[in-house]
Image (cartoon, rainbow, N blue to C red; front, top):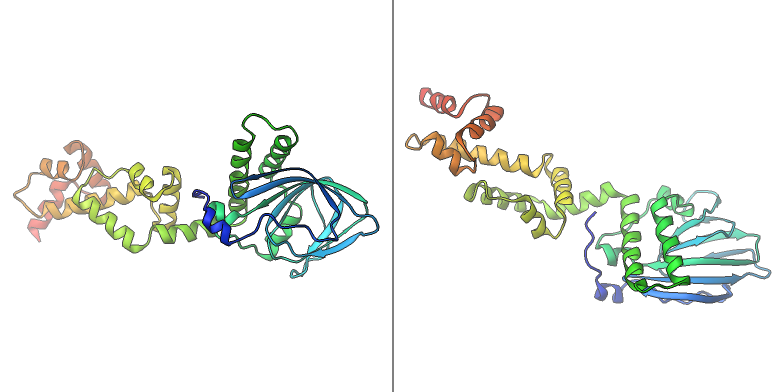
Length: 297
């Protein structure tokens, strides 16, 4: 999934990461650090006589804890589920919890995933259920590393925590809807207008279209560009370019004043042999045979 730079302006208008826990949450803060699109905290809670609560998170957050509890989303038809060591609470989703212990110590990571990734984050009922006990080893490893940095900060703690917040956002998008997000992005990136412009570019400068440059223009990696391109068109960028280069060659073969060798070079092929092989693979005949058929008809 493509991760764009954190949009501070967007974050300022969106989710708050500095919310105060309700009075029902008797808590003390042990360590905290603000990062790119997130805020990490180590907190201790004292529950005294309370063993149940219903709350609506004003922002999305992760929790890493050994505190045993069960919970459920009120809007979901699911029954209470045992909560795991790693939990994710999406913003504005009322949640109900039960527990027995009187004291809890947890790592929290309040995070604005859309602000970090530039992608929406919508969870289905089934996906909500999965957030109660997140068994993503990468998310767990990232949270453990963040906890280490909070408890014993190193020389580059800020940089480490910044990278962890981006990694957590990427993991969530990757886990909860990579196909949906890919389709969303590919529709924006590879619509008919873009493809038509690419075809025009291929015909004007065949052989000079570089996938790396195309990816850079979209602000994504070559691998991600190729994946989204295939999702939008059903073929790789290289195959798309080759097909339109050969379509240009077919048009040029109609001009009998042009030599096959000249057409090969104009269409971006290094030599006539490679042009002939590619042409035969697509048309089932050599360029000269194709031209001869045109003359017959």
